[in-house]
Length: 479
Image (cartoon, rainbow, N blue to C red; front, side):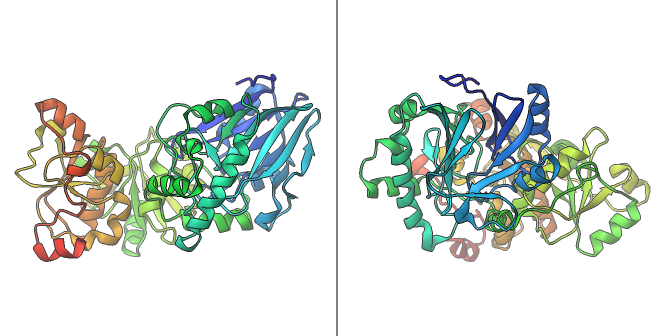
């Protein structure tokens, strides 16, 4: 994209994380990269396409939703790392305080302290001469909202929300034509609203961002906190890893999987390893290794892997031959899942050829689902469930299922989400906990409604958010 002052910025969007990193063309064949993830494949591809060499890398904050690629770029490219001095990072970098400037060779980068999403958060204002061209706002001002202030725990949430109020007002005082380049966008669990727009301008945000219309601090705090949903458990540990600096990786080998014979995989399973089946839902359901975790390979694969699998367990992958190991390993490394020890050589065919046991899960299309005939468990986020669900459907977010599976008395259960992938993950967790007679629903609540001209339950009329257990004692415990 080109800003009004012809400063060239190239967005590199990670649909799975819901984030954008940016390449700022410095005009001399060099580039500044802002908020790159550890998986740098897309960043390098875009830099090569633009003929740019990465000379600087800047992090707006200590990211909780992914591991930063800054240390890797410093190692591989000799890039200078720019970050807030208040972050107390434990690796070589240039620590910036509020108002500090960096000469980028014609362009000027100014650090603006904008705490709220995190304590040490900074935004980076890019100026071409005297004119501000744009600002990298990270997790401060984002399109249509502001990033969540609750990642440092409940004792800090109110203070950070009030800091976010002040930071957004500071950014809103920039000239209306100033481009806004946020890191968090639609799909991020850092409270970005849905929508296709990833970038904006100060003027557009002043006109459309509901949080910028709130002039009173308390009203802002209530609106911001009222919009928050759940977030993955790994958010609680990645910030400190980013402070210490993620380990430098051998990029030639990091995206590969070691082939393991079926006998070794069987032994690892017995020793507590997590078998992660990344094949499409229908293939997993038709036949899979008992106790394996279904997490279909897609943009959101790594988020759910990190949410429901322990980072302390070895992981063995089960995949199809046409699924690229790099597309499995690199996203996992992005969120700090380091213990992928290999893959089942030969896939599921090798497992069955060895005579080992397999399991299957029934698949229902949404239009086949009769909620009066069996328990329906909806595992979408609360906001999705409240927006519309089947009558009588129980609710338990997929991210909380591992800790609450004991609330569900085993019973014939159809598990559903928006399409089927999260439902399959939930069904695999239930199977591992001893549940049988499970079905994965392919399709979502709206598909069910459209197929039969039926009404969904929505909003304030929604069913209680419980696990939908038929056992009254369990229902009471869930409340």
